[in-house]
Length: 254
Length: 320
Ligand SMILES: Cc1cc2nc3c(=O)[nH]c(=O)nc-3n(C[C@H](O)[C@H](O)[C@H](O)COP(=O)(O)OP(=O)(O)OC[C@H]3O[C@@H](n4cnc5c(N)ncnc54)[C@H](O)[C@@H]3O)c2cc1C
Ligand SMILES: Nc1ncnc2c1ncn2[C@@H]1O[C@H](COP(=O)(O)O)[C@@H](O)[C@H]1O
Image: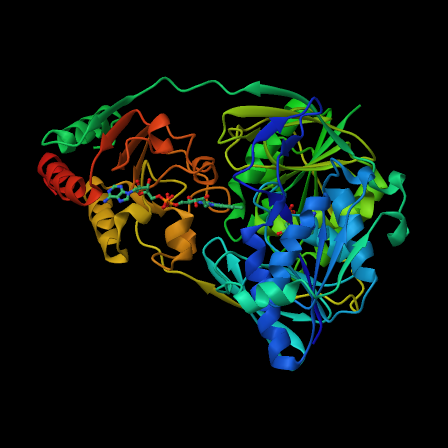
């Protein structure tokens, strides 16, 4: 079973941040693999290992995004595709979905996995837009995923428990944090990753034009939210319990 | 003339609270307000949707709207959009609504904004970043309708006058459209008041050290009475407590009278789910924990020492 995994590169949390005139946050240094996407990479590796399949990781981002897919390769993914293009700076959710859908059309797959929401964007809608563009069924918020007789069987998180969902393949499935236990890349994995195929594509390689990825939304203002007046922060002592109880009584909940 | 629609989720108990909140806001924004409710119970919920401002309710009661994930609903919604061309479509931030909105975006090519905390105009949405310290205003452009996913409790539901016209929506998805189907439902048994409704929410994080210590939070909640136990994602992911207790960006949004954060650092993804609380009490052993910036009362110390004393104090005062 061949699986494509959508992984996002996020700015290295250690890098310096600059807020540009266009309100886009820029950060120095390479990107890192969004930790929220490692659960999907791990799930893909397990399914591929059990079926002799291949895992392809796909990302759209700046050039530094290659660092993110390299981490997935060092975990064990077989190949990587990085879509990068100047026209994609500031791409919104729709543009991102169009690019990822076009990249997926490039190669055959039995299943597409993604994270539920990205750490820095958290739109949480990109994978569904991709599914619709590719005319595929989908299931989001999977906290467990198995393939039984060619059908994906998923435990889907709900507000008050979970549903069991069955989904025909090929499909797009998003995995929650904690769905799997992502492996750490081994030294051998890290060295091996350097030899693995990493394809870099531009918009035109995907048959897309700048018009296809023109943003539909624009940041027009940033302003500080009203700050809450500072409260009292005190060291714990014998009066702590009484202080908290006084506050509860004051709020009329005791 | 502006048309504002609300994606209204309905359950066995009627419309979701979010549907009524969004309709209340929609009245401010649109000359014509409609709700789209798809799934069993939709027609029955129409009167209450009307009583919150929908002059038209597009209602479809077919079971596949509920049992088949996203696709039948997205196809039917897209059909309605193509026919009536609303300017703005407001969605709640639930999993199902997110799925429908994402699919509809692919069909319409519209702007989609998630995580909105306000919708100042039919072509504007406001969100918060950097731990809630900054508001970001976004202009929505491109083809109608603009799609906006609004965070829970961003608006207060208020009833309105007016008659409602109910129009029946038939399932439009061809049977052969491959889609995921719900085959089983598992609900966790919950004791005590619901997290979103309790007057007091007591949430625990990794600072509680051990899952067994959540018992202290249960005891405190029982002693207070109208109180529910919440949690950070760190401890939900670690399996200490079920996901239904998670407060934050990917969990529940609560606005209690008092929020007590115990052993929680105050990461921005947690904070967005609780910063609407009237008062915040934090217990944390690290004086620099970001949660203290939100706290009306912060106690710097070991939660495992403070909690038993607090339980005893509350019991003494309430006689429980
Ligand atoms: C996309 C995304 C979505 C997310 N969604 C959510 C969400 O919905 N909800 C959520 O909560 N998080 C969410 N997170 C995770 C969030 O970023 C934090 O990792 C998480 O909230 C941290 O949980 P915590 O405060 O329990 O743990 P930590 O950050 O580890 O904090 C533990 C705290 O306990 C204190 N402590 C330790 N020992 C004691 C003691 N004995 N007594 C008192 N205090 C003690 C420490 O000083 C520390 O401040 C999300 C993250 C991402 C990337
Ligand atoms: N630029 C991107 N490149 C690859 N995958 C992405 C990208 N943006 C989003 N995704 C995928 O979509 C998921 C949800 O992201 P988002 O909708 O941005 O919250 C992520 O966890 C990724 O799996």
